[in-house]
Length: 249
Image 1 (tube, rainbow, N blue to C red):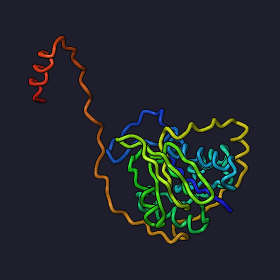
Image 2: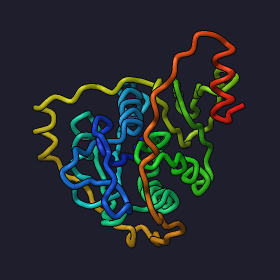
Image 3: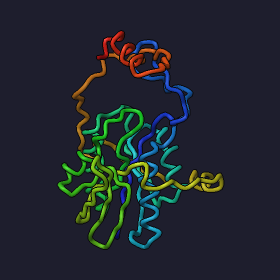
Image 4: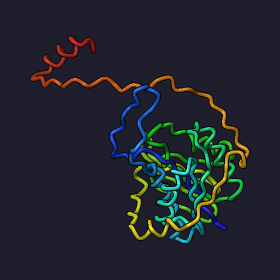
């Protein structure tokens, strides 16, 4: 079966103003609206479009997290994913652990393509897709703005500083998605209600043979300094003087 695996991450909704915890150890998540990471949602939309073109038979959404992450997996089912898998874990993991967990699912599901968002808007690590491709020993294309598939290859357009780079990959492969790739479809209430009745498969890191090692520790988070108001100058000489006064030139 031609199967596409899509990784999803549960994050604070992009419209929410993030606040730091009093102890500086992270951000406040209690009572905060959570959503599918926008880049992951784009990856899912692309997988659904590929299936609708007849180039895939099944789309499987997978995420790692506590029971709350099922809300985002059900959103994926409402969008049109055929199945959903939750890797149960009550801990936030580093990208390498997540990549190893996804590799375990890949080995079980044998997909022809893995689609991931290029990064998550909470941590901005931009590492999981590249790590998964390395562990899986398969080709990768990051920051995709266009994807074209055949039975055995993928052609990916990606934006770089010099313009557009075109990559040709043998399948199976890993592709990470950028914002310009597509616009995810709107999920209607009847679809969400139907998705609530659908099963979600569950596995664990232990069952996948993944060790939950920690390589990094966050010591403290702090908000950036408040920006001062800008100053409007009349001439170039005034601009140079203002920059000199601030020690910038």
